[in-house]
Every structure is written in C-alpha cells, then in structure tokens.
Length: 251
Length: 320
Ligand SMILES: Cc1cc2nc3c(=O)[nH]c(=O)nc-3n(C[C@H](O)[C@H](O)[C@H](O)COP(=O)(O)OP(=O)(O)OC[C@H]3O[C@@H](n4cnc5c(N)ncnc54)[C@H](O)[C@@H]3O)c2cc1C
Ligand SMILES: Nc1ncnc2c1ncn2[C@@H]1O[C@H](COP(=O)(O)O)[C@@H](O)[C@H]1O
Image (cartoon, rainbow over all chains, first blue to last red; front, side, top):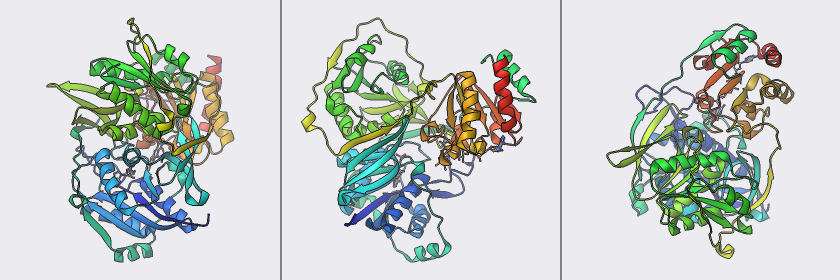
C-alpha cells in the first residue's frame, strides 16, 4: 500500500477490571478500572497499522466522566496520537453511545473506526454495529485479521463466527470490531506513561455535540444470580462413572 | 401482513438452526401475534419447514441475500419490521444475530437488549432480565419507546411446541439494486464434523490449557467426546494457544451452553468460562489442583492428572 490511511479512530470504554472479583452489592464495581480488553486490542491494532506505515494518525476516544481519565492516559501511553474524552457522567446504553459516537465521527472524519466487539461490563455487543447503521457504513464484526487493499480503499477482514471463520471485504470508511485473537496488546511502559502525562486530553462536553441523546434502557435492579454449590468429590474414575449412571442418570 | 413480533430465523443455507425457534417461546410470553422472518437465496423448502408454529413466514428470497451481509440484511429486516407495523424484533443470540440486529435496531431507532434470559410483566410494564459482567450479575431492565430489539438465550427459553393453526408463507419484495453494497463476502472456513453442535449437544467435553498440543487435545478431549457422542468445547486459553478452533470457545465472549452433562478437563474455572457453562445440569471437573475454583461449582470433582485419568475414563465408559 502506498497511500496511508489518514486517520483511524478507536473508541474505548473504561470497565471494572475483569480479573478482579467485584465488590459485594451488585454494582459490579471493582477496585481498579481498565480499558475494556477488546478495546485495548482495538488500540493495539491501530498502532500496528500505523507502525507498518498504513495509517498516519490514531485518535482515541472515550465517553465517560473525569474518573476515566486514567484509562485515557493508558491509551496515550500505549501510543495513540491524541485522545478525546466526551464528558458524560450518565449511565449510557449502546444506542446512546452509538449516537454520541456518530457526532464525533462526523466531526473527526476517520476512514476506519476500530471498536471492541463487546464491553465486558454490560456485555451488550451492540455499539459498533449500531454506529455502522447510523452512519450507513459497512461493518466487519468479531475480527481476527485485517488487511488493507486497493490503496486503502477496502479492508479484508477475517471474522470469528459460531461456525468458524469468515472472510469479508468492506469498502472504507468502515467500522471494524475486534475479537480476542486479533492481537496481543503491548504492555504500557513506565516512560510511555510518564510521557502520556504530558499529552493533553481534549475534553468535550456531550451537550456541546449539539444533540439530545437520552438512553432508552434503564436498569431497575441488579442481583447476584444463585450460585451453584460444590457437589461431591470422587476418588476414582470408577466411582465417577457409577455416580454419573446411578445418581445423576446422565450416562 | 401485520405482526407484533418478528422473529429473525437463522440458517446455514441448508436448514434452519434449531435454537432459532426458541424465540417463539419468548414471543408467546410477550403476547400478541408473531411472524418468522427468513432471509436468503433459494428459501422455498426452508420456508415450508417453518410452518406449524402458529406464525406466518415472511421470506425475503433473493440472490443478493445469499450471504448474511449485515448492511443488506439490516436494511431488509428494518423494512419488513416497518411494513408489519411490528413492535418487537426478536432472535436467538448467536454471532449471526449479534452482527445484524444491533444495526437493524439503529435503523429502527429502537433500544436493544442482548442475551435476555427472562421476560416479566409488572404493573403493565415489561421488564427483561439479562446477565451482565460475565454472568456475575443479573440485571432487570426496562425500555422506553414503542419498539424494541431483543436477542434471547436459547437455554432460557424452551423449544416451542407446535401449533395447529395454519402458517401462510408470504414473499417480501426485495429490490436488490437499492440495497447497500459496501460489504462483499469472500469465503468461509468451516469444518465438517460428525459431532453434535456445541450449543445443542446433550453432552459436552471441554478442554483447557494443559492439553498442551493439538494432538493431545484431539486424543483426550476428542476421544472422550467420541465415547459419549458428545460435542467439544474449549477455554479461551486453549483457543488462543491453537489447541482448538475459535468456534469451540465457551464462555462470556464465546458460546453459552446448557447441556445435561459438561465434563471440564484441565480447566481452572475462571468467571469468564463459568459464564458459559453455569446452566449445565451436571458438571464434572477433572483437575490436578484440589483448590481450582471449578471444584466450587462442579457436581462431581475428581482431583488428578488428566493424562492418566482421561484414558481410564474412556475405557471405563467403553466397558459400561
Ligand atoms: C475479555 C476476556 C474475555 C474472556 N473470555 C473467555 C471466554 O469466553 N471463555 C473462556 O474460557 N475464557 C475467557 N477468558 C479467559 C479466562 O479469564 C481464563 O484465562 C481462561 O478461561 C483460562 O483457561 P484454562 O482454564 O484453560 O487455563 P488455566 O486458567 O491456566 O487453567 C488450567 C487448569 O488446568 C489444571 N491442570 C494443569 N495441568 C493439569 C493436568 N495435567 N491434569 C489436570 N489438570 C491440570 C490447572 O490446575 C488449572 O486449574 C476471557 C478473559 C478476558 C479478559
Ligand atoms: N462509553 C464508551 N466510550 C467509548 N466507546 C464505547 C463506550 N461504550 C462502548 N464503547 C465501544 O463500543 C464497544 C461495544 O460496547 P457494547 O455495545 O457496550 O458491548 C466497546 O468495545 C467500545 O469500543
């Protein structure tokens, strides 16, 4: 490819650390927040595309309150060129996120928007597809490989589906959402983190986007589901087979 | 043809996916009439196979719909929804429905919920339950507006009983030239298998990281699956390291299963994996670490080295 893609926008969300146990109570909050793992994969992919000379600028964007600035710094430390936080303290649903992102995409005019396939707190798996629908752009979801073709006019994407793998080509501009096998994100280095502290974060008030976006979903309660309890320890394979036959009656 | 609920049916170009039909049970709980929506090319036989559930079958049959490209499919689905004056667009959760329905929801300006496991009515208002945060929490959610898009978990809604009322098949006109054209299908890589489908199997054998290499995985996990006529699944760790293909992954970000029997071989029991197996009736864990978290939720636990125990188990099952 000779002509690099001018701009890739990566939308990322701050989520409770999936490797930590949530505090009791039902909010799902953990002591630590991180960049949503799928979004970290999206950032990593954008950086790799730039590093191999196929893109010029990587812009990171998140919607959230000031408390997510730590994850914005982490994105800057990974290597995104600049970061935007749309300041919005409300509990948003994916459709609200997609409508806010649409305004941002129309302003930034990237050729590719990279997103995660799913935020691991709400587990919705919607915002990327919704954004694609709102913009009328092609989409490639659950992607494990991206190649650019025809001077950056199209992308060939391998998708992970329930039946195996599928290859699609999409015309750019397009939305691409990541799956786990796309790459392994780099670790943030301490010098990278120091440098990121000096990079500015552009903060935009969501009301300044000039549109009314109200979430249409309301969580009225959250409860912990009943836990399965530990059953019986068996000592031998014979005992196991006997239990499965006589007690559980599954064999 | 008007219908309050449209059920998007998934197929593999040969036949309808059975879990698709579980959405009928959810549609009946929502109340009102429902119709099936079937998109593809050469759909006559499949459309006929859908009669007998008390639902009209709306078919968009066109060469332009031969592959499930999200931009076209969402446009056709949104159009059918408007023409039917429908209120709910429904499908069983899968990579097919998760790819296409959010896009259709955006076209319809409707809120969407993924992986609904229960529908409740309180004081005239509908609310929906769905797991969040890898199933560690169950959220009850209400929706604003008069339209909604839902995907449901097949395991949470039973396979529907047939219905004797007649089911007219109606063809939807498709204007191929007006469909979006920004996505092209290139190829698909699917392995033919004699084993049952992972999400429909009665027995599933899951393999984890210590299976080491593909040969060991196939010999132990595959061998045990063969002896029980079971499907095979895997953890993310096993898929990431190339022991198993991506479509074997069970869990929060893979497939959700609810078999009669799940046997976990060398699986620690991370919350992301448990999210996909919690609804199994009987869970067996074989793990060499007596403190592995999987033992806290297994029906039967056997502590030991899987390299010794699994061949013994295959033999014991063969004898019995
Ligand atoms: C965003 C995100 C999404 C994820 N999604 C999923 C998902 O959908 N599905 C999923 O499974 N995971 C998922 N994970 C990963 C998950 O957190 C765990 O890392 C993973 O499930 C661990 O896989 P494992 O049990 O095979 O490996 P390990 O955790 O390494 O466990 C291996 C187990 O094998 C035992 N063992 C070792 N040797 C032997 C032996 N010889 N005999 C018997 N037992 C032995 C060990 O005691 C150990 O308990 C996700 C993680 C993230 C961050
Ligand atoms: N608040 C947010 N800010 C920026 N991007 C987001 C936000 N919420 C979700 N996204 C993006 O949308 C993807 C899918 O999220 P979801 O539909 O909530 O599962 C995530 O992986 C992110 O890339």
